[in-house]
Length: 469
Ligand code: DUC
Ligand code: ZN
Ligand code: ZN
Image (cartoon, rainbow, N blue to C red; front, side, top):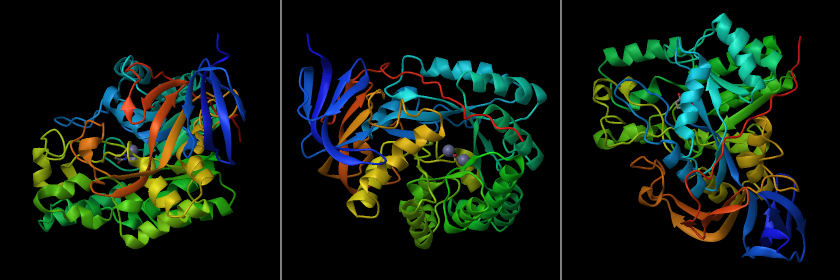
């Protein structure tokens, strides 16, 4: 009988701290040895000339999320996690949206039902908190935190979803006492409303107005306010989907004051601009997301944040709607005004190839920083480390083998999500994850799916050590 189930031989291993050449031995889904000349496995993968990296963790994806009457998301758990897998991910963290008036646990159970048996990657949920009644804050959230639901997102925008400052403070207080992690969507809803009314009154209702009504100042002010509220509540927070240098400055200033804050950015803020929303024949709707993509200067600022450490997390914010579909980007009311266009873009499969190609291959970041931004920091921030997010003895054998010589042009026809377009169509990338291993099982082998739907599992998360004032 073989000592190991699998050995990955001769690849260049990268973690968030080291890059070296070695073999990895796997048994019962775990990494059990790292060394040279390892032998005695049922199966051997030759990774010579390849990079052997921790499987990607995308901690910001939306799957099967209710998005309004008459609108449906393009991905369910089957297609969303399949697409994630082909993009080198082994874990994704989607959101469970609290339905007002419904116990959170009931919504969570419904999400688990949707996920069960359908996963190609491991999954762990964040909760979206959309109201702050005493039962939710006093009982539900603390109980769920203890059961492994240790992160939640709050919105400062969207009527019906946004929390006011008092509600955010109460929610942050629960995070502090339970050791949960709060993600905040920072945009000033009242300022956006004001701008939307002006644009609509002037008849400016096309997709491009989505970007004009959500300028950088709207994001900067809300980022400052979120950080101030976190400072007052004395709790770490994650500022999600940061799109520009002004919001980044707020993060840096808060850090200088001693606040623990994690910054996240996404491919759309490196690769797209508001001009993409100008596309003819409603094609601009393909790029409607919030915060909106900005300009070339903001792209450069975001790159600087990736290089210098303002950003800890690089996530996709995969939020897929079909383009040529009345339940998607061509939702009929969206033709009356941009504000009804379903908000979000797909990208879970292209997140890492874009950063690998534009970041590592072009010399902006090194391999260890790539691993930190796409895997390790996600596991650390959301209570999954060191089981996930690294290559070390005892960790889950979640591994992506990257071939740096592959050149590909991104074509939606070759991706695996449920949408009908990619915002990154036609972009050329160098490097792709050709083999993906989930807890020791080869799921994608040389670009071919060999794993099964249902091989992914739900993962509970750990809270931080709770701190009290
Ligand atoms: N925020 C997200 O995080 N995703 C999609 C839309 C939004 O507003
Ligand atoms: Zn958001
Ligand atoms: Zn999102």
